[in-house]
Image (cartoon, rainbow, N blue to C red; front, side, top):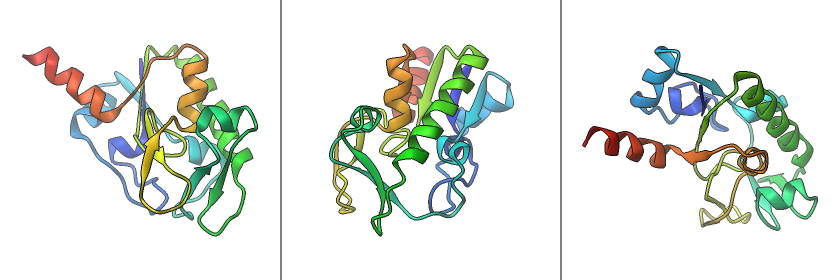
Length: 156
């Protein structure tokens, strides 16, 4: 079973109430080969919500208490991001997920790139909180671009 970010299957769960639909990923959910999950909704956030970024590091640093997740107005929401990460981990364990496909640049789901914590639009290398936790527990976590590229490679 594959676990995928809900926004990638067309659910309007992003902070601004939008989605990032990828029809090939949505098809997997429809065919019951994948299940969608949104760590932020599992944590109790609503849609829409204020944008957030990781300040002082990346997802692994948040888990270690060395960085935090804050809203654009400065509210610390670190504990909610950690809560969502652990609930996503529980879901992955329940489903015995073999692969996790998460939305790149998200403070939860970023697999290799996140925003720099200054709300400037600049990206830096790093994992989101959920991505970091899943990787620590041995899950294979990739971005939607990596997943779609692997599908393309399988058909050539």
